Image 1: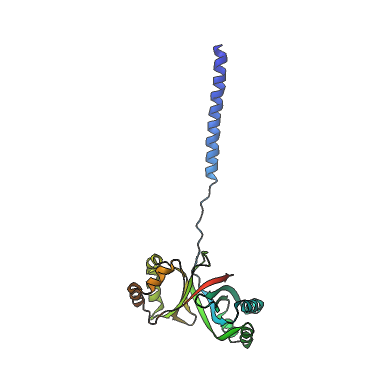
Image 2 (image 1 turned 45 degrees about the horizontal axis):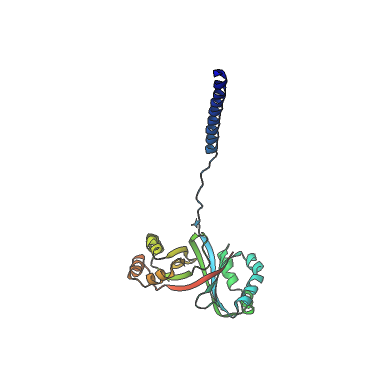
Length: 238
């Protein structure tokens, strides 16, 4: 009788030990298969040549249809769609930002009579403005298109001095609801700066624009002109 009682206990104990060993082995095997997750880098610091066009249209839908119809012509000239924005105060003010393979070809394209004719047919009114820029920083992380964007242009005494001061001011901008999306300078003059920001908190940002703190930072960075701002919303991102 004692033997009968002892045998089940013996086999149960052996089975338990086997289960524990198996669990331990499986756990070790599972741990060995884990791989570290590398954070995705969203910033680009490789210089990118871009052309920015701002113009007014009589009817956005008509203009957009005309713009889309001429995509093959842009591609033939090394011009690639990037962003289209519409003004907040005037939605018929359109901002078109494109990436270019060859700045010389892009400048020639901008002066091509066929482009002027295409713009007229698309309902562009007035004189469009063209900007040719080399962007040295871009943040590609996706944010809502409902968040206001601001294109700001201004002149500085020295690019390197301005850039150093601008980078040092990042905590101050973040605290005031401003996120940098991209910045660079004119392709032919690095004293002419182009800055694109997103207003994560527009109330804070508007107040900051009027603050003495920002005026002091501008002076320290060597800004020699008042900033010109265009506030818009992104309506298409390619």
